[in-house]
Length: 151
Image (cartoon, rainbow, N blue to C red; front, side):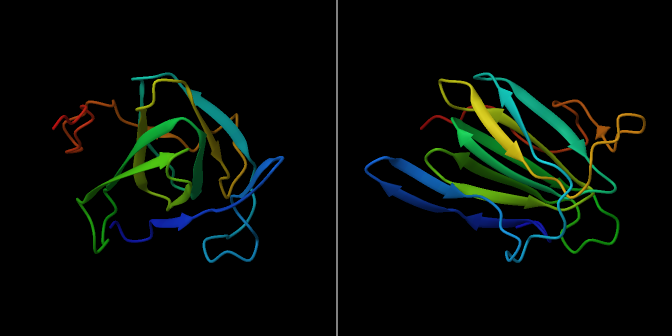
């Protein structure tokens, strides 16, 4: 596991009306500060990656569909520098993934329907100076396999 990445099992409370799922609470170990919350979607088979932030940590939950989340630690001085990590999350695995700043991340929708992802970053999005540092999804700088694994 990449240093600083935390996978938190989410609490789902079902009843005869539906269910409630807590994603992030201010008393969680991974909670630092609230920047904003937003929803993004990804169509089946689409890869959104790679990017990282210098100022913010992300707190990602897939609330509909399933995604394959890829992580890469390129941080200087990190004990896990050069490591990759793969986490599946979504309807069938309700978890929050805390992604520290400077860790590259991206995801692929692996469900047959559009995936809905909620992110609760620690900073506001700055429209004039976005904290987004991108690489192509197929960069040779990150040894990650986005392909479907059969078998």
